[in-house]
Length: 300
Ligand SMILES: Nc1ncnc2c1ncn2[C@@H]1O[C@H](COP(=O)(O)OP(=O)(O)OP(=O)(O)O)[C@@H](O)[C@H]1O
Ligand SMILES: Cc1ncsc1CCO
Image 1: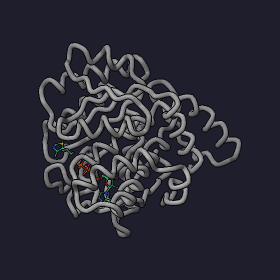
Image 2: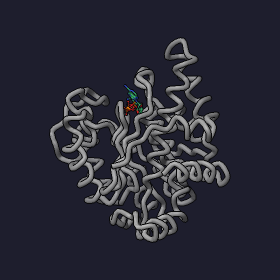
Image 3: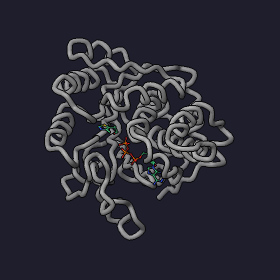
Image 4: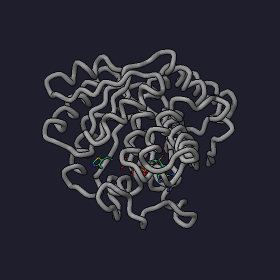
């Protein structure tokens, strides 16, 4: 996994894929900047009459339900259709589905239209979309829903089943980030409480993960073959848009990079203002050596 995420980061820097984001105006600027910081190219087009063309030319599509509008609802449906037709990987960020039936219904409709590679949210949002009770406060996760040593086995079973049912990577953010492909679970333990002191860090994790999706494409078949030969493939084969594959590494890299950058930025910041600036610098500047030395993941 460690070598895999370094290769993925290098590949995106080299290939600079176009990442189409339809997202909320609160964090749209931050999302564009983190995509640039890892070497990819953001485009934030959202007019319903143009999004199909833009999606068709992109390497990945990010749909973020924050601050939803009628225009973006229509655009997301159109882009999801185009992404499926063109075999473009999609990350769906379920912002607010635990506090708004409009967004929950939209998420379900998008899941009927298409097949995201990654389903992302905080723990309350993922419980809500899985059809379970949740305790969100607005777009924030409720403390009752946080991952703990006591509930981790139960939560893992729920989110692994949700991943298998949707044949998507599930990424739940929080103090620890939880990533699963339906078989394996990766806990990413990097991070800083300062990340919850500025808005949009969850959206930025979505944007980073979306930026890494195109880098998983050609390597998927090879990664699976290598794993089978090495006897370590865990058995789950995902049919994503007609390809077999697994975008687990993109989600682990997206969350780990945010977590490590948050830890490093916190050391040199005076408060949320300088933290925000330093966070972007760290996402841009963290070296491979730092990534390897600071990465804290557990794989089950
Ligand atoms: N208390 C914490 N300690 C360490 N890391 C944290 C903490 N809170 C959040 N993070 C990190 O911040 C990032 C965003 O996660 P969070 O769950 O806060 O997203 P969110 O609620 O969707 O955020 P937003 O709504 O602001 O976009 C993740 O990388 C997560 O690991
Ligand atoms: C504050 C806020 N409201 C809708 S989206 C958003 C950014 C963090 O998700």
